[in-house]
Image 1 (cartoon, rainbow, N blue to C red):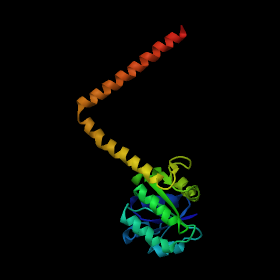
Image 2 (cartoon, helix red, strand yellow):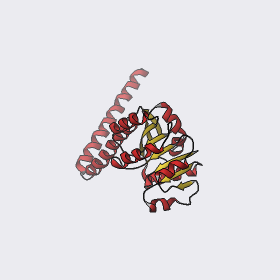
Image 3 (cartoon, rainbow, N blue to C red):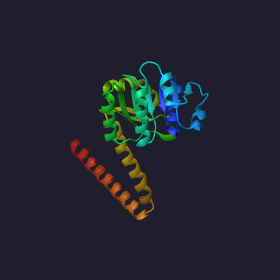
Image 4 (tube, one colour):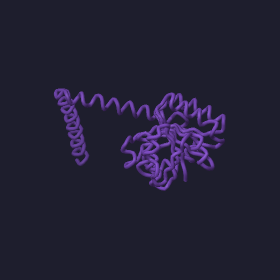
Amino acid sequence: MEIGIVGLGRMGAGMARRLARAGAHAICYDRSEEARKALAGEAGIDCAENLAALCARLSGERVIIVMLPAGDPVENTVKDLLPLCSSGDTIIDAGNSHYRDSMRRAMALSQQGLRYIDAGVSGGVHGLEHGFCLMLGGTAKSIEIFEPFARILAPAPGNGWLHCGPSGAGHYAKMIHNGIEYGSSTSTPRAWRRPGVTAAWCARGCSSCAARSSRRTRSSRTSRR
């Protein structure tokens, strides 16, 4: 079982290592020689000197993860991969691309016989040890092809990864995830810096819980009568 990975930042390198440690063969590329050297020599990982070499080393129907920042890095890399790929190959965009861009790319690639998965990925630097949360968008066949790798990357084979729907659904889910995460991380510290507000929230919460508990108790007593 082999897979290509383009982009060896903290998450890309973590994904390569997690896959390799589970027995997969990861063939990787990053334009930074330093990033490639950091993985060189690790069991189950080979680094290619360019995209053409990466594609040449993958046999059969290729599966290639693009773990790069959204925007031009993803757009240009996908364009560079097109003449190197063959019908039936699968490209996974694991960056934070806008879901509309993912829908557009999926349509364009499908017309050339290529499969495209938009993957919202969460886990950061802790993903190597604890697993990555994967939110996947694409056709059922595309997900079926990627599933063996998703089961390795996720925290558990049956948990932590989800086929969210058609093309664009994975990155849409990740957009919602980011909104909740960033909103919570921004608002919570501010709240704790205002003890009066926090105390009021706690008081209301306790009062609400107490009221519900009281109603349940009265209801229980009535039913016993």
